[in-house]
Image (cartoon, rainbow, N blue to C red):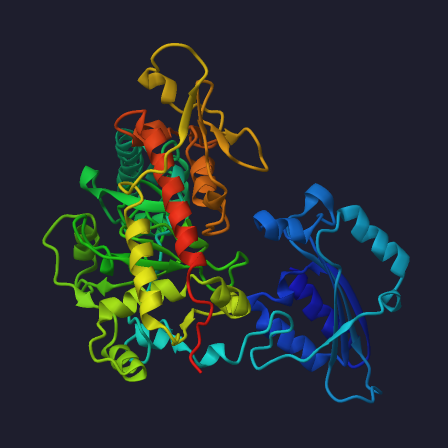
Length: 551
């Protein structure tokens, strides 16, 4: 709405005047807002943007730097004051764009006091003059060097029109639009929720067929006890698409980093499967997928490998680059069933292009390099801090591009070790932690079970001891375990955030992570493994070469 208001105001003042707004500030550097920035530069003779920050749709240190929310609890988005001037008598060419950031770590009160003292734009003396680049970036502009790296993937390559990227196929993770009904740590609960959801849908379908005078909305409103009617499910009902409950649809899905769960992966109930039926078409299909954030992510860049279907939220609107792909089903209904694990698994296709293999061999003058080497190298080169920091702006706005590092094998070897760690986080070695019990005697399995109260640290700063419940604590968590971050949090933070008993407000469905473990004591083992993965990942990443671009 605020973009519409700016459009209306610009038209209203015609050739001369001033427009001033207080708005959501995400348009300043939003990837989808380049057209807005281009129009403002084209229509106005000068622009002043005072960025007040306060974006609380971020996490950790990034959130703390954003500072206080200008409108208190009434806002989570960044806020900007923008003054737009149309002056037909301006003597300069084009549009002068002036930008001022209010600063890091300021409270709401400090920001408001700065505005009070400034009175007007003249009260801020250190305005930055912006020269937009070819992408209409105003701040956090992309690097010219990044554009010369080898592309990981592209829409044209994905469509088969070109063959100039490393990967042909890539895809976002699955999007359900009804997580409480689809996902559950306990397999029996996942099955029962799915059974009820399927029955509600079939009852609605039967009523719709028997009463052609009723609209889809009218029928759906009468069958909402065990299903939420949003998105494509309404379309399936309109097309009278049938289904049946089958526990073969239950699949293991990587929901968040190092957090797997059960998923009822029937595509009638999943809003978007994207290309996942060509990446993991069957329960037994083996694949490895490099998962990076989607374009426009506000979180620091990270990459994560998984060997099972990823949810869209695994890595912030995740984009997935698989080692292999599978043929596209000729019949969409066949694809639906194949994905669930019903039917034979088709032959897999190498998803790394021959062009990329030739390019890497030519660059490194090494004909022994394989596509597996390149896959490992890609995963390795996406991890060094030098890559993520130097090209942070590019990585937030584009699909990653891959530099040719001087030491190919150092990154390929690191990538292979990280791959093994991240794929096998549930079976890898354990970091030795000290178990502390709050009672005397031999602990029983029930003492290890999670409760509705979330796990928490005894010390929020050092984070060396974790309280599992009223009976058990884990001590000796090393500082290194808090240095490896993926999708804005450490693996242990993801574990604490997701492994707690929750009840969905609308459906009443309970999701109990205790159901994920065969034995309650496996919870401790899982935490020790997560700590091991974190410590080893940090060690490997910090040992990567700093030089990532060949001369």
